[in-house]
Length: 135
Image (cartoon, rainbow, N blue to C red):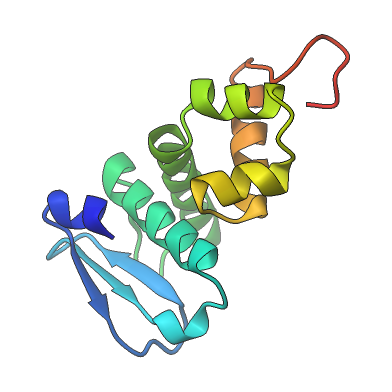
């Protein structure tokens, strides 16, 4: 992904056993196994998430406690959402009538990631529609 390369983050395609994609703070490296993704949206979502680790500084080791891993993953997701699915743009699309699937296609991410973005923005007190609307 060009955005990662502009930040001097090396994206290396390689076979991975336990993960489909991972970020290594040392060396500013993202390893990705593209064969393990079914769609470009899945691959882009994973790379966006890994960029979130760099943007937030949320790294951990394989032996870190579950709670630390979960916190780092949430921080990475939040940083990725804020950077790649800006609230104003996402809200405008949803208010214009896009479904979550259509918004996902527009941003070239998974629908689950758009849903995560909506949840994050709602937790920040931001809405997506008129009062009483589903979004």
